[in-house]
Length: 52
Length: 329
Image (cartoon, rainbow over all chains, first blue to last red; front, top):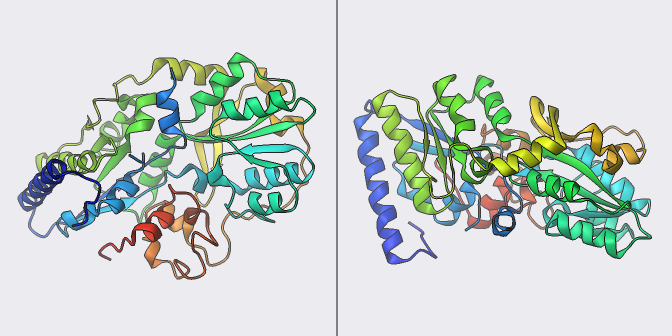
């Protein structure tokens, strides 16, 4: 676990969600593996949001 | 927080928190990586012809057919880094004797800014090379690729802030693919994974919005209006992926006078998107991890990138290189 830059409360929340993820995967068919794809798309996003 | 899911996942080591049955892969999403070589080749040509070319810094080192923009700059090409289209317009205003071209790349997040600037009016010596791309058509294409089996999409929160969470509903409704719009904090990504798993558990496919503190169902209507006033949607080329129907934004006829592609003539050359041995096209569609590429970290490094995914801080290979991510293979 490498969670530099996160405070203790956030790390705790992350760990709790990760535990729920582990519990949830156990509720699926035993041995089932899942694959999720994340898709992004940016360039200058913070700048855009800061404009009036 | 960097608005890239892969950066959040790699930087905070989120994969190490997940059970080994859960795999998270990166799909297309780095605008610099998917910008076709023709854009860079033309920008290089203009710079070497004395035109001032303004670009986002990420584009400088991206390999092109003959040379990168950085190499063109080293050969006295006038290439300048800007942080936004407004800065590029300012360059044009301050240098009325020079022709200034802005290479406008990015997805739905960036396109409204260029549209806004064009509608406000730009100096006569300013023009735009428009290479904006749209995310949902690329996702639709991925669903048609036979050997990519995925169980859910984690959708980009910033793109959804513009086009609305509703724009991703089609994946749940038409393709029965669990879909969650997510933010970019570590807990956003973890929550999105949890929400996808719950959909799988329930045997349902819904489009859920995890990033509700930013994203609305209808998106940013003002930004959408700006885009519809300036751009036409048409089939476009994506570097390493190919031609995707209705996936590109092109300047409308009313803006022909600021369209650099129409203003200048270019030397016809054969544009090379993917160099021999480069696997960026496979990384971009999630077929392989960067560490599975033979060139990764050897021939191809951030200092000397061989493929486009190693250049930008948003590129999957660059992120893996930086954070030493070695997923379970």
